[in-house]
Amino acid sequence: MITTKWKRFLRHLAKRGLWYNTKNMPKQCFIWLWVTLFLVSNGCAVSAGITRGGFLSILPDICKSKYQTRVTCKEIGDTVWVYLPYTPGRSGLAASKEEGNDLYVEYQVASFNPYKVIEPPELKFLVQKVLGEIRKLLLQTRNPYKFFVLVVTDISSRINDYEDWYIGYLDDLREFPVCIDFSGEGHRRLAWHRQKIEVPAGSEEQAKALSYGDAEGVHIRYHNITLREFVDKQIKWRIYKEFTLEYNKTPFDLTAEEKKDEVIKIVQTVFKAYNFKEYENIYLRDSSFMDEHKTWAGYKREDMEEYKTGRIIRKPAF
Image 1 (cartoon, rainbow, N blue to C red):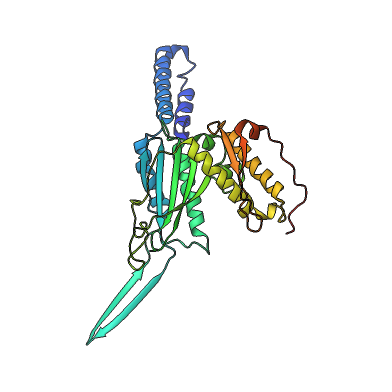
Image 2 (spheres, rainbow, N blue to C red):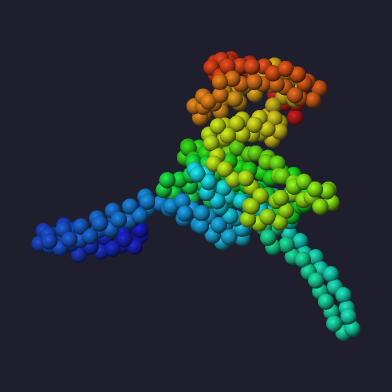
């Protein structure tokens, strides 16, 4: 892309007749060659993008400068893990005491990623912004990672049971507005996963979650994400999204058959989206409260791909 400065320079050359004046042919050729080399070298620099090592250092700097947020990055194979620890909210506490003519003031001011998680929804806003920065950098990276995982963890709780994983796939980033907003197909393809946090064995008084006070993400079991794992987690995410987050789009009185059909549609959609054929059989079981089935219904993958599901016409009551 030619900058405004270069456009002015080229217009200046044209005014002086250096491009179209045959008397200045040698000078004209030299200038053409020089400008061409500049543009080619500039284009190569842009297309070259950043390295994986550059990604690991640039993303924390961006998050720190733009969002006052501390993140750490770790590379495992073709997966980049981004760890976002947080504390539950901004706060300031103080205690004081007097001794003679001296005053002692002890204070606590939250300063380590102190984002409110309920109102206002600062944490959701922050997660979306960090995801957006991950997407932009991955699309500029040479030999980019195939998967990314953003881990969001409350490190202030001793009894924290779960942390949130947001898992994305490079091909989805190129084709869909993944991470740009939390809506549409891009949101469906950003697999959200609730990961259980380990608690070491010991007495209840002494036991605390491994995430407690972990600013660097040491407690995470990092690994290389595979398409198989991603497909599995995306199916679970889509089921949760459709029947929990988007509950007002689905009738409340679904029959057992309708629920099964809706789940089969989700499985079919994910398998088709990624041309995934590693599973030979798929088994389904409804464990809904007051509608639990004790047996599993099995389907061959080929049969499930061709399975014709019913259509729900009625709308939700509210």
